[in-house]
Image (tube, rainbow, N blue to C red; front, side):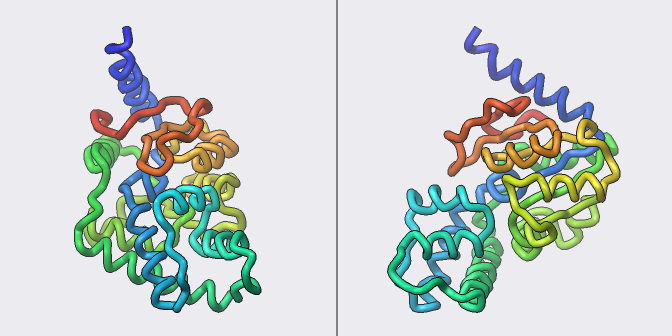
Length: 238
């Protein structure tokens, strides 16, 4: 029975995906394992700004519970309790440097889309399903990743692209998914959210959207008990 479980889960996932009018994708960790590049880019920004911060993987994994890059910087500084809070200007400059370096790293080609992602996108288009993005990352980060992976005209294949700065509250709040549904003009039950983290699962679930989880490096041990299906990656869904 244990050997059959993965095949059963894959079948359930495939059926869930096929029945959806729209597939709504998270980006970081879901479309590609980008978080390690983000971590490196943060550390680059800190060094450029004269800060002696160095986020190792353990520290970064903990900080990922805070959604949003600027919010993550502020949270880390507050935890240090050694100086006055960084100004909004300082945080914005750190984030600008970080975003630029992240784009440079992505352009090296070191961060391909995760297994099964390209096949799923192609199959969804062939089925005339609609595609959307709902993420806490920035439009600049989305474009840096997908321009490299899918080509400069990638955005034409997506009916809605909603980033963290487009809504008032980031995940785990449902705002980004509520806005995506509004732009698609679809009911939550007509869609499937594809996520990799507990924060993403919570956000989509609060918007009443069924969730398919594809486990990623930093969130592999999250609680996904509320997801419809949990897979290691999206292979076989195309």
